[in-house]
Amino acid sequence: MGAGGSTSSYEEAEHTDFVFLWGSNAREAHPIWFHHLLKGIQNGATLYVVDPRRTTSAQWADVWLGLNVGSDIALANAMAREIIHAGLAHERFIERATENFDAYRTAVEPYTLEFAEAATGVPAAVIQDAARRYATADRAMICWTLGITEHHNAVDNVFALVNLALLTGHVGRYGCGCNPLRGQNNVQGGGDMGALPNKLPGFQDVTNPEHRAKYEKAWGRDIIPHDGWNLTEMMDAMGRGELTALYVIGENPAQSDADATHVAHLLETLDHLVVQEIFLTKTAQLADVVLPAAATWAEGEGTVTNSERRVQRVRKAVEPPAGAADEIWIMAELAKRLGYDWGHPTAEDAWNELRSLAPGLQGMSYARLEALGGIQWPCPDENHPGTKFLHARLWDEDPAKRGKLAKFSVVHHEGPVEQPDEAYPFVLTTGRRLESYNTGVQSGGYASPLHRGETVDMSPEDAARLGVAAGERVRVTSRRGSIEAPVYVDPGLRAGVVFMTLHFPDQVATNLLTINASDPLSGTAEFKACAVRVEPVRPVPSMRAYRAEPLAAAGDD
Ligand SMILES: Nc1nc2c(c(=O)[nH]1)N[C@H]1C(S)=C(S)[C@@H](COP(=O)(O)OP(=O)(O)OC[C@H]3O[C@@H](n4cnc5c(=O)[nH]c(N)nc54)[C@H](O)[C@@H]3O)O[C@H]1N2
Ligand SMILES: Nc1nc2c(c(=O)[nH]1)N[C@H]1C(S)=C(S)[C@@H](COP(=O)(O)OP(=O)(O)OC[C@H]3O[C@@H](n4cnc5c(=O)[nH]c(N)nc54)[C@H](O)[C@@H]3O)O[C@H]1N2
Ligand SMILES: [Mo]
Image 1 (cartoon, rainbow, N blue to C red):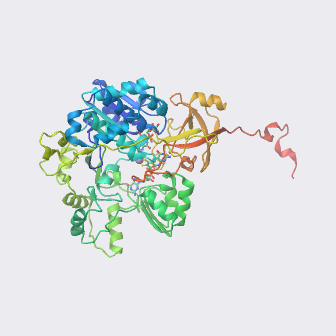
Image 2 (image 1 turned 120 degrees about the horizontal axis):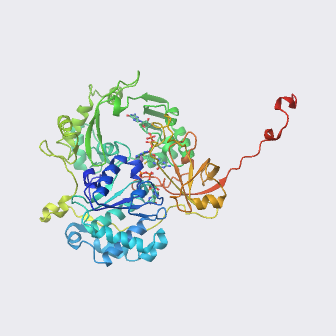
Image 3 (image 1 turned 45 degrees about the horizontal axis):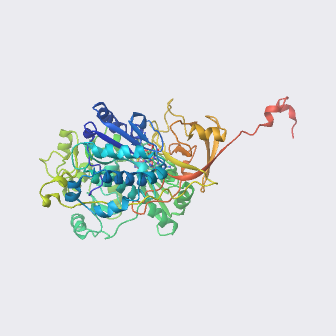
């Protein structure tokens, strides 16, 4: 439908009738947004959670759809078929605002409730009910995160959900929408700034000559006219020896990338690795040069953009430690050594340059951001209040104003690349817990009773079948690696599914297990599904325990 971003605002989660929380554990990973949703529930909204695990988010739901890992397209397509057959599709919206509906209708026809029940493990009646509830709600939104996007067919997964919104006209109206909740605090801002391989700042296409021309004029330089590499492609290029130098800013790929053994090997093949960091991470330890940075969110000035597209100011609150420098200063010094004099730009200078070039950000001066407490893009001029929700144009009576049609995408169920088999009978899915953050660099160092360290979470049935009790150590093995950790018995897990986090890689490197299959379009790895085997690690009784005599008496041999 256009630029990458959530269509709705947080406020709307408080004033909606129905929410699909799909592949998202928002209570733990997006607690601020979840608090808005809780207000919505208090105001009468219905919550349906779609997740292989009965998460702490699902505990707040009216209905939990506990599907098989990687079966979301089968579920969504079956709901679409049900909505169409029940006459609940929004015909006027489909006709006026969308294209490709006929192909879509034909494509979802084989997805009967019975087929979907077999593919997803969700009872047919529950799928039918969910479809009808969503379609008949006056205002309804779908919110998703990594349960949808960290698969080898991530983009298809997203299309499957967007199709449902188009089918029911649940987009472009207050309280409706398609919402990919953003990951790290400024992921949205990073994308808006052009930190993407195929985009210039402001979501302008690198391959579009008109878009390029504007930036070439402002920067006085030619821009390479084709897309760059995403992270996965960079790794592949390292493997081929085509990428020999890497500059990493604020990322810890040695521990966060799938198939960590392979990644560590690739990073070692580099001629030159530069890491700009606030901590000496595992990745930084591999670097030829480490550039110590001031933490932007507390030690420097700038903006962050959250999941509702709201640009907000962050201000310097504390002095950085001695030796750490403002990142914009580091960039300018690097530029100088490469022969360009940028002077001494501030964060505000960089922001103003962006505003002058990127559509939709022009109206967001620092003064206005301060005065209004943040502004949601698009905000085209200094009198514009910002935009609460996107795509209202799709409802315009005037076809000219409706503009580009929203397209139904034909997508089909595939399931994960690695299916469980005799040798690797479990599906491992990985994710987050409230009390920790990503690779633990920023959250590992504090003591808290909440920290239980890494565990292998499994269902009570599976634990019983393997004969392991809570706390007992097990070995988890995939085709790529093997780790050991204690079992945590989680009644919210279904048999056959094992869950681990990415939070404690120094003790238990979960990413030794994960598969580096990735989506061809987004480059996102399939962190959410690989096949593993789980075995108890019984302690070998130590001889020492049986000795009657103290060891010292055993002689000097
Ligand atoms: N406390 C905390 N908050 C965080 C982070 C953190 O590390 N800690 N990290 C931040 C970042 S970078 C991100 S990207 C977000 C991520 O936020 P989330 O995406 O909510 O986090 P995850 O736990 O990785 O995955 C979400 C859910 O996907 C489910 N899932 C797995 N496979 C499937 C599937 O095939 N289908 C469906 N429908 N669901 C599936 C998992 O069971 C899990 O509950 O969180 C952000 N917020
Ligand atoms: N198995 C498994 N693996 C996963 C995932 C999963 O669900 N399962 N999720 C994936 C996802 S969604 C993500 S986002 C990645 C996260 O992967 P990473 O981004 O590699 O992990 P973080 O631990 O968040 O690392 C961020 C780094 O930025 C540094 N940093 C923080 N602030 C600043 C700053 O202001 N300036 C600079 N220069 N550095 C700073 C921190 O010190 C930290 O080392 O992990 C991915 N890996
Ligand atoms: Mo993320």
